[in-house]
Image (cartoon, rainbow, N blue to C red; front, side, top):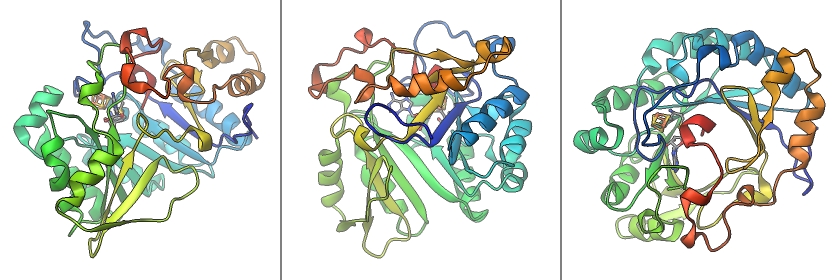
Length: 326
Ligand code: SAM
Ligand code: SF4
């Protein structure tokens, strides 16, 4: 078992397959000219397999594939098949653009749930946010995933002046569709234009929803980062991931592996542990993993204080979100 200094058991691993993407969401990708990691620096399918098998032996019960966009990784199907053989809940966070091409592979690998990101229901806002015109493809693939019987969570980064006027449109979608809409508070990363004025917090979102719908909380599951709610009579639910206004670090069970094989014990961790280089040198990475977990900070990588309103994203020592794996 992997236990940190605060007695938190870590049994959930998020593996980034790439730092490339077929979208350019401004809040995720830094401004500077984008250069992706060279292919030889990425964990290769057999290396991902090897590292994953060790994490499973160390008690991991859930693996999420992410990125960048996991489904643009050339070897995505091979990697998904390899991980499908482990006794874990395998899942994925994707922008959904290529989901239809992987429907068979995902089903074969036993993926029963998927998180698809979509921040707006307006085609022109989608284009403005992502600098690409793929709204319809993403929306169609959300519907496809529900038809395939998957549990579909829709990730919506809530941002003032961008999609605050659409919060209730997303909640309205849950009336007929069995979707689980998750509003994520906008988080600061290097070069992502974060400012406090753009954050729409938990309470503010609930106030907006309350103007149109009557809703009630749903029982909280252990390790759930989201606070969940349902409008009476709706097929789906909505939730808020309140990393900024009400963090959930006390109950954290997450670890991350970047596409170039660096382990991060927190999304906001300053330090990284280079598992891939050690693996390539033939070293035992078990002690490195344990040491990485043992040194985890109590909250938000020790980089964002309770008074998050004054956070300066330029002072946070971290990668951009696209290079971490969200
Ligand atoms: N490309 C995939 C996708 O978009 O779903 C997976 C990677 S993406 C980095 C994972 C999640 O992080 C997405 O739901 C995205 O909206 C979210 N995200 C990225 N930057 C964020 C930020 N600054 N604040 C909050 N959420 C963010
Ligand atoms: Fe790509 Fe996902 Fe980041 Fe958007 S949020 S740029 S889709 S990795």
